[in-house]
Length: 393
Ligand SMILES: [Zn+2]
Ligand SMILES: [Zn+2]
Image (cartoon, rainbow, N blue to C red):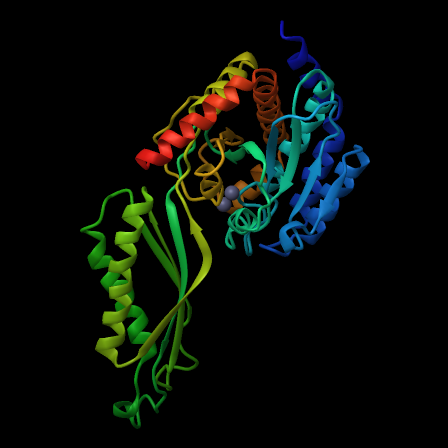
């Protein structure tokens, strides 16, 4: 590589591979759910302190949020590399967040080797509860990313892409309250909360024909009664409603709410819903950052297209991306294995996955080098964001 700083950064990352894989493996082996990622935080922050980076835990009054700042020779703009480390119930690290915990630290190891030749700062920000809870949204509200001029994070997947798309998403728990009765002896005295839940699913399925194909509505029933001979007096479910634009999600939320209200009306139940997570917004992939990352992947000889037509979910980095120039490229760790499956959990611990995470980490480091070496690029990224916010896309 003829760019000396990038070559040095890549070499530094390669020379720390074993310790970095050990971090990812430790997190993979002890999956923890949203806001309970205590062992992961201990593992990661012990590493950042060992590397000599001042590290603060419990930032933004969140026990499992943290921040490490690389010692730098000069002041200047701050680029934040974002970590995630929460897992999913039952299937562990099925989204591979062990890798996206490791990659920013790997990138920072590379950057530390060249930071005295750049103008600016690099922070690693540990963001809890991406799989529900919206850690980044809470951190944003509490000023956790104040002063940051760009954020980068990378996510494992079964394909690679620079400009990740994400649906805006609302997550609600829904409860119906009815009245118990003997299901055979006096059913006329009962008000059936399970029926209200089943009707809700049917109403949503009827609605589905008339919504934009990119929108998604999906849910589960958590509680549907206690015994078949008791009319269920209580039912509980959990639903996610997603759309390709923040404004269409508003429209959809009204329609979905009516599905539940109609079910309550038909059965005589009462209905309430509670927001589980703050709204996740769509991701606005910053063109300047995306261009730099794509260029870095090309330098590394990795195939990573700018865009993809594959399906996607939602992320709380969406909310970050509407305030701070950001990208969340995906890196491929397996063939045809969707995230959120136990097969993906296994893939996220493989040597191939770690190899791909190191390449993504190098691309993050190269992108940061470009940004801190050419401050006009950060200005350009900020202008692009301001324009995108103005037009709403
Ligand atoms: Zn996920
Ligand atoms: Zn994920």
